[in-house]
Length: 411
Ligand code: GLA
Image (tube, rainbow, N blue to C red; front, side):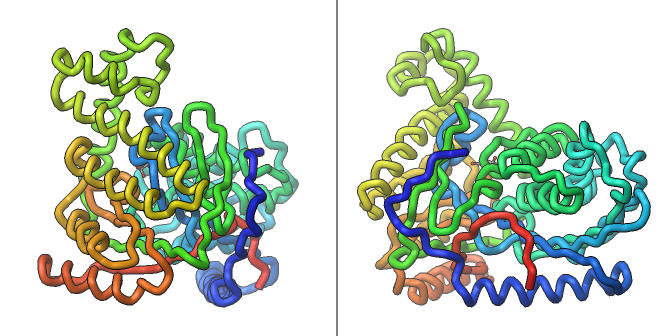
């Protein structure tokens, strides 16, 4: 397991949040009984979403990232059946999935249940099933979908845990992460990086996860959440074409690496390319690829600088790296939109704010803001006022706590 830093006592999820979550899950159980009928034996799980503070678009380039899990996520209510069938339903999406365990679809249906079906297929491979393995499972939760807060990793890692607990597989967190990753890449067919399932699966409250995506080494870095808060402001912009544009960035980075690699001995991914190498080759490179590579190469430097800043308790310097990252995402990586830029500009003009940038892939979704405690009200007012003046509607501004990761909840 990853190394931990034991320098500080880590604050636990607050009592109020814990009670809110338990209440929400009790309601979810009622929803389950309305959908699948009443009766004993229903168990409940929660799995968080995540927000990434540093290392934008680095995971698929082998670079380091610094995400944290948040106290919003996916709810699961599961009851075993007396046969070998499974049924999935959701309080958030229409449609129901039903199949025999021995006859799961080999191809995704392009529906929301592809994610849990993919996980189920992963766990079934090489598992000796208990005599009665079927179950009904209701999904729900309080994480905005498509906002860049990783609802898909939340659902995949949480499904893996709920099934592991139900079938008594005893899977470790890293095994849950691997099942989630294999399901998304292999079955759903999204060429996602490793950051999302790792940040959900290895979550610890009161910390940022340091994850080096080249060798998958990781560490938990304490963030003093009594002095600092994390805000997330949602533009509510959702781009239909975002997946295509994301895949295009992945391709462009791979191409930039293919052209630069011969000039950087030993390089195995774009993260290994040095700025001097990029500068020396710039004239021969397509300007668009050079721009994408510049974002990646400099973002690696910024992310190491942010880690050093956090280690010495210099949060203003950490925040500065975030805001610089946003400028680069806008200019060099071209994944921002005017709504995100407006939120970052108003946030960074607010006293008490240390830094702000878009989070997730971009093309809409959310910005993340690091601020000093006490500045919350002013930040909210400012973000709402400036956004309303420009776009005629308000963004959704929220202050998330950290989270300790996927777990069974027994209210
Ligand atoms: C999306 C992907 C992540 C990561 C981010 C960009 O959220 O799911 O794996 O690549 O974009 O940092």
